[in-house]
Image 1: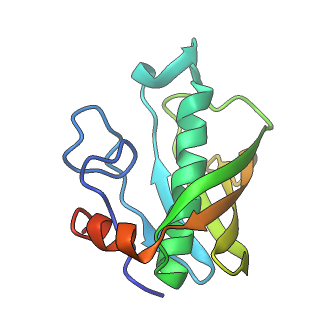
Image 2 (image 1 turned 60 degrees about the vertical axis):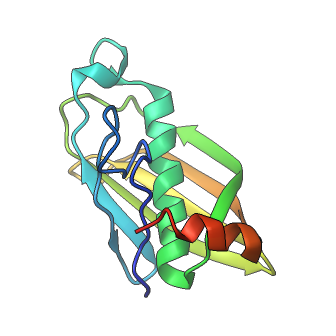
Length: 144
Protein backbone atom coordinates (compact mmCIF):
# COMPACT_ATOMS: atom_id res chain seq x y z
CA UNK A 1 0.00 0.00 0.00
CA UNK A 2 1.16 3.47 -0.85
CA UNK A 3 0.26 6.84 0.64
CA UNK A 4 -3.10 7.97 -0.72
CA UNK A 5 -2.84 11.34 -2.45
CA UNK A 6 -5.14 14.33 -1.91
CA UNK A 7 -5.76 17.46 -3.95
CA UNK A 8 -6.32 20.36 -1.55
CA UNK A 9 -9.33 21.78 -3.46
CA UNK A 10 -11.04 18.45 -4.15
CA UNK A 11 -14.73 18.65 -3.24
CA UNK A 12 -14.61 15.34 -1.37
CA UNK A 13 -11.18 15.27 0.30
CA UNK A 14 -9.69 18.74 -0.11
CA UNK A 15 -8.90 20.50 3.14
CA UNK A 16 -8.83 23.92 1.40
CA UNK A 17 -12.23 23.58 -0.30
CA UNK A 18 -14.64 26.03 1.33
CA UNK A 19 -17.69 24.00 0.31
CA UNK A 20 -16.20 20.50 0.35
CA UNK A 21 -16.66 17.48 2.58
CA UNK A 22 -13.01 17.42 3.78
CA UNK A 23 -13.01 13.64 4.25
CA UNK A 24 -9.99 11.61 5.34
CA UNK A 25 -9.40 8.28 3.62
CA UNK A 26 -7.41 5.37 4.94
CA UNK A 27 -5.94 2.45 3.04
CA UNK A 28 -7.28 -1.08 3.44
CA UNK A 29 -5.87 -4.39 2.24
CA UNK A 30 -7.76 -4.11 -1.06
CA UNK A 31 -8.43 -0.39 -1.37
CA UNK A 32 -9.58 2.51 0.78
CA UNK A 33 -12.35 3.61 3.13
CA UNK A 34 -13.80 6.56 4.99
CA UNK A 35 -16.83 7.36 7.10
CA UNK A 36 -19.08 10.37 6.77
CA UNK A 37 -22.22 11.80 8.33
CA UNK A 38 -23.95 14.02 5.73
CA UNK A 39 -25.77 17.10 6.96
CA UNK A 40 -29.03 18.63 5.78
CA UNK A 41 -27.19 20.94 3.34
CA UNK A 42 -26.63 17.90 1.08
CA UNK A 43 -30.31 16.86 0.75
CA UNK A 44 -31.95 16.09 -2.56
CA UNK A 45 -35.33 15.48 -0.91
CA UNK A 46 -36.21 16.00 2.73
CA UNK A 47 -34.06 13.70 4.85
CA UNK A 48 -32.36 12.05 1.85
CA UNK A 49 -28.83 12.75 0.62
CA UNK A 50 -28.67 14.06 -2.97
CA UNK A 51 -27.66 11.35 -5.43
CA UNK A 52 -24.83 13.50 -6.75
CA UNK A 53 -23.22 13.56 -3.32
CA UNK A 54 -23.57 9.78 -3.07
CA UNK A 55 -21.96 9.43 -6.52
CA UNK A 56 -19.09 11.70 -5.46
CA UNK A 57 -18.42 9.48 -2.44
CA UNK A 58 -18.49 6.30 -4.54
CA UNK A 59 -16.23 7.79 -7.20
CA UNK A 60 -13.69 9.25 -4.78
CA UNK A 61 -13.24 6.07 -2.76
CA UNK A 62 -12.59 4.09 -5.95
CA UNK A 63 -9.96 6.64 -7.01
CA UNK A 64 -8.39 6.48 -3.54
CA UNK A 65 -8.40 2.65 -3.66
CA UNK A 66 -6.54 2.62 -6.98
CA UNK A 67 -4.07 5.29 -5.92
CA UNK A 68 -3.42 3.71 -2.53
CA UNK A 69 -2.92 0.21 -3.94
CA UNK A 70 -0.93 1.05 -7.07
CA UNK A 71 0.24 4.65 -6.89
CA UNK A 72 -1.52 5.30 -10.21
CA UNK A 73 -3.01 8.73 -10.85
CA UNK A 74 -6.20 8.21 -12.84
CA UNK A 75 -9.26 9.93 -14.22
CA UNK A 76 -12.73 8.41 -14.10
CA UNK A 77 -13.74 7.08 -17.52
CA UNK A 78 -16.98 5.33 -16.59
CA UNK A 79 -19.04 4.75 -13.48
CA UNK A 80 -22.15 2.60 -13.01
CA UNK A 81 -24.16 3.36 -9.86
CA UNK A 82 -26.97 1.41 -8.25
CA UNK A 83 -29.03 3.17 -5.59
CA UNK A 84 -30.46 0.41 -3.42
CA UNK A 85 -32.07 2.44 -0.60
CA UNK A 86 -32.40 6.13 0.24
CA UNK A 87 -29.28 7.47 1.94
CA UNK A 88 -30.46 9.35 5.04
CA UNK A 89 -28.94 12.62 6.20
CA UNK A 90 -27.56 12.71 9.73
CA UNK A 91 -26.58 9.03 9.65
CA UNK A 92 -23.00 7.76 9.80
CA UNK A 93 -22.07 6.20 6.46
CA UNK A 94 -19.27 3.75 5.76
CA UNK A 95 -17.74 4.23 2.31
CA UNK A 96 -15.40 1.56 0.95
CA UNK A 97 -13.71 0.93 -2.36
CA UNK A 98 -11.45 -1.73 -3.81
CA UNK A 99 -9.45 -2.42 -6.94
CA UNK A 100 -10.92 -5.30 -8.93
CA UNK A 101 -8.77 -5.40 -12.06
CA UNK A 102 -6.26 -3.83 -14.39
CA UNK A 103 -5.59 -4.01 -18.12
CA UNK A 104 -2.56 -1.93 -19.12
CA UNK A 105 -3.44 1.64 -18.07
CA UNK A 106 -7.13 0.97 -17.28
CA UNK A 107 -8.13 0.09 -13.74
CA UNK A 108 -11.41 -1.42 -12.55
CA UNK A 109 -12.80 -0.70 -9.09
CA UNK A 110 -15.94 -1.08 -7.02
CA UNK A 111 -17.35 0.81 -4.07
CA UNK A 112 -20.20 0.84 -1.58
CA UNK A 113 -21.95 3.24 0.75
CA UNK A 114 -23.34 1.38 3.77
CA UNK A 115 -25.18 2.38 6.90
CA UNK A 116 -23.72 1.70 10.35
CA UNK A 117 -25.28 -1.78 10.36
CA UNK A 118 -23.51 -2.66 7.10
CA UNK A 119 -26.57 -2.52 4.83
CA UNK A 120 -25.60 -1.44 1.32
CA UNK A 121 -27.40 1.78 0.38
CA UNK A 122 -25.57 2.42 -2.90
CA UNK A 123 -22.84 0.72 -4.88
CA UNK A 124 -20.78 1.43 -7.95
CA UNK A 125 -18.30 -0.02 -10.38
CA UNK A 126 -15.92 2.12 -12.36
CA UNK A 127 -13.23 2.27 -15.01
CA UNK A 128 -10.32 4.63 -14.43
CA UNK A 129 -7.65 5.56 -16.98
CA UNK A 130 -4.11 6.30 -15.81
CA UNK A 131 -2.97 9.72 -17.00
CA UNK A 132 0.21 10.13 -19.05
CA UNK A 133 3.55 10.74 -17.39
CA UNK A 134 3.75 14.34 -18.65
CA UNK A 135 0.36 15.23 -17.16
CA UNK A 136 1.11 13.21 -14.03
CA UNK A 137 4.32 15.15 -13.36
CA UNK A 138 2.49 18.48 -13.52
CA UNK A 139 -0.40 17.19 -11.42
CA UNK A 140 1.84 15.67 -8.76
CA UNK A 141 2.97 19.17 -7.81
CA UNK A 142 -0.59 19.95 -6.70
CA UNK A 143 -1.15 16.73 -4.74
CA UNK A 144 -0.11 15.98 -1.18
